[in-house]
Image 1: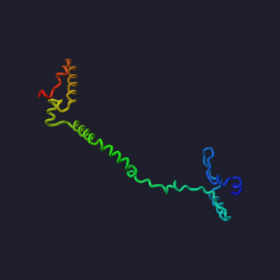
Image 2: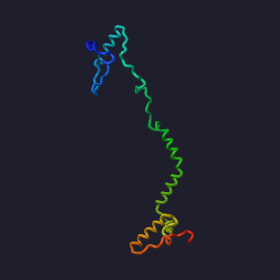
Image 3: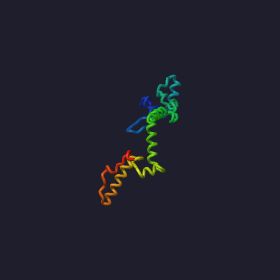
Image 4: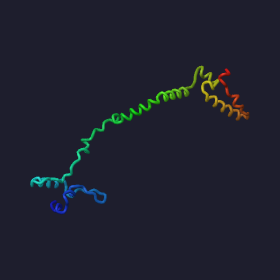
Length: 155
């Protein structure tokens, strides 16, 4: 140990070293570093070769992580406020889709079979296209579109 100290600098001999991308241990181990420190104190010399520790970076002095719901509360509140602005429109669309998907029954079913355009305007157009396809398959010419259109004022 004493021979190594003759050709090494104190600062570098206690630290790990990287050589060609690999880490190597310190030239003087921790045990001998302690022996040297005792000798310095025994002879009344200050030991100035310890690296200062940054205690702020220590995990013991870090703020606790906390629960995720506490960390993301502000973003969640903003998202809720944003979604509440369009709530009435979205609710109306959802209810309308549910009503349109539901099979009609009772008087609505009878009216839909007799006069489809009263309940669903798209149904009349779909009915026209299916009638035209059936007529074309049978070899007949489809009638003009004006004959298929029914006006609510006629009834």
